[in-house]
Length: 140
Image (tube, rainbow, N blue to C red; front, top):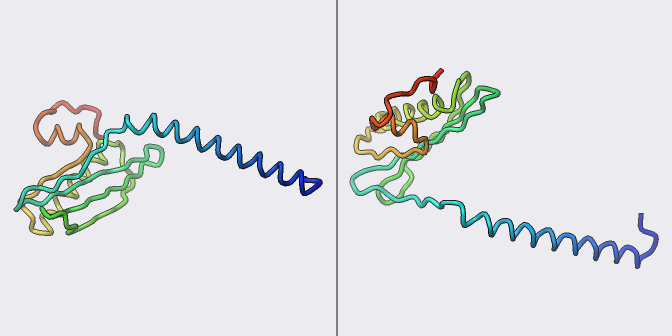
């Protein structure tokens, strides 16, 4: 508890100083970390192709997942967006596979056949491209 107006002002000035020092520390940490982050820039596909980006998130404790899918034209226009949860999932690999499967089904539903599929799960992408046929223990 503050006993006088002068003590209140001193306390407030101290709090402001602490605030500014913590912001300086955060800025320093952010400046050191940001150059290490590899920024990935989305690039549109060549006409007449469409680009479908897919991703999945997996909670191993609850065995839940969620997927996100975005389909864009060669001009970058968003044509479709899908997000969906799923329960009883056993692995991150299974979640990413499900996201890819749902992506392919979406392309069929939209009658899109010239599509570039893009995902960040290397094991799934390599498997589909035929680079990795040895996947024991990745599924359920």
